[in-house]
Amino acid sequence: MTSFVRDQWYVAAYSHEVGREAILGRTILDEPIALYRTEAGEAVALADRCVHRRFPLSESRLDGDNVVCGYHGFTYDKAGSCVFVPGQQRIPRTARVSSYPIVEQDSFVWVWIGDHAKADPARIPRAPWLDDPNYATVCGMEPLDARYSLLVDNLMDLSHETYLHGGYIGTPEVANTPMTTEVDDDAGIVFVSRHMDDADCPPFYSESTGIQGRITRWQDIEYHPPCLYLLHSRIAPQGVLPPSDGPDDRAFHVEVVYAITPSTEHSTYDFWAVARDFALADEGVSDFLRENNRTVVLQDVTALNILEKVVAAEPAGVQELSINIDTGGLAARRILRRLAEAPAEVTT
Image 1: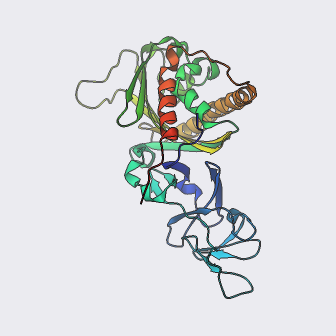
Image 2 (image 1 turned 60 degrees about the horizontal axis):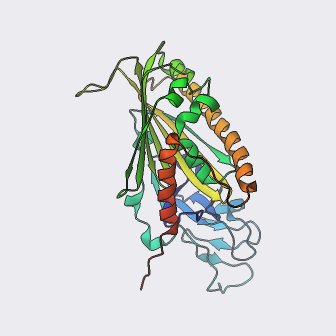
């Protein structure tokens, strides 16, 4: 399978990570990118290499809206054009760095990797809860020393919560309850649902909601390849189901968002966020969910870093076994393969 899907939007950062005090360096699909803001607050993404001696612009400084290379002083405007060369007035025609289309939406900074002419902001999937005042959100990012397809597999099959995240979000019912999988081929979205009508309440939810005893727990996944994963989580006292009409006000709702951004062939940015519609002003709940979810993410990071070494060392032709719980992950793989292998459009 071709590793990367190009001509796509990817999350490069959270909006709060991009500023003027320092230029942020990220590598996306093997492309080093420097991100900063203009004095007017506009986010900018440039190739993170000076054309002169390849010094990283992320290790350089801003002068107004321009980037001054920290090695020899070559200076670039927000479009990537060189506007100053030390020691001479003539600026070489090739003295420019690539710029990238960029959109800020739902607390994320999205960068287009591929043909700029195809960079349609309408194609960016939504995660509106992340900047909705009716939700409180905690978030973070953890780097993986593992290929991004392993993280996709991990998130599409939540039965691993029972074994890898016991004591946090995992209970026996997650692994033992059958799930349903649907694929919208036209939209390229995979849906995986697991509805548990009588389940133990894991600490992640008992501590944050105050529910004691058995619960009704629903997990409804949407995966928008290649980058965005949404988990719509519903938790309520056992037996409380959504009404046929009206608000579902006896349940607690948590929107878990992952942006899965390939950095290199064997490394990934794991952006995670947890938005909730309860205890909005309770900093104690926010602190608990932030630390608890980060612990869960780091458990995944540890497992996937181990798995990456195993997969990388395997000889060609090794077969893996797939079962019912892998249906969603296999559907995601098919879509990613189709996107990666799609022939480039010919333009005239």
